[in-house]
Image 1 (cartoon, rainbow, N blue to C red):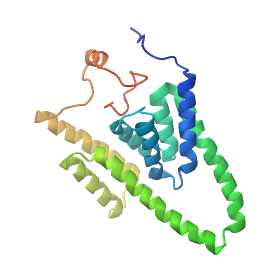
Image 2: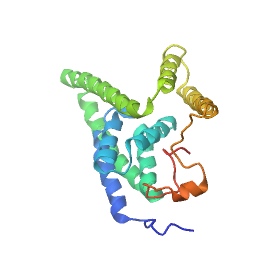
Image 3: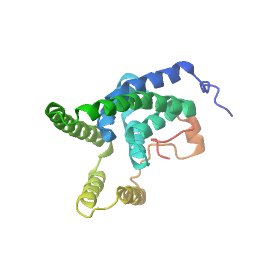
Image 4: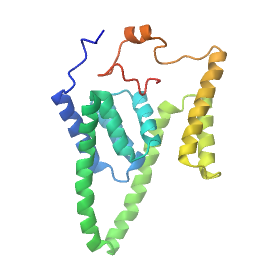
Length: 222
């Protein structure tokens, strides 16, 4: 049976809100990568209330694991979660348009001033600020991702694998997923496994859904 409460496929107001939200995020994503996370969290979780913090952390993990830029991947996943395929396109256009125009303008400008001492000094400060943004993003994600001794152990092992063993990030991500499966299996055998998503189709249909598209479960345990 189809969900009668499901909103129309093309909700113009929602698509416009997605586009404008990521249009505002785009120009402020200096540094790329996880430097964009605090801005996305403030807009998507704090202001718009489209996602819960834990859901966003799950989606950012997927965006970071997938090939491509963190900001672009995140925008597409969030847009799809909120408003389906049209939402993904709206969010993608919103975050790409200002970034493309700014980068193009900066490139032309930088060619003329790249050797100026004041410009070089400014970039030293900008790089330090980007490091601070990344640390802040790690803190915000860690509050929802590092929830017990096992997750702390996995995070520590990941850092060691990257710093000391020189493992590829792709291999580390696969290892983290495998470790999570083993951990869940052990908890299940001990009777301590408490999943956060419905375990049957009947439970899934009866459970209240916060999502625009209830059949989409990224961030809820797929």
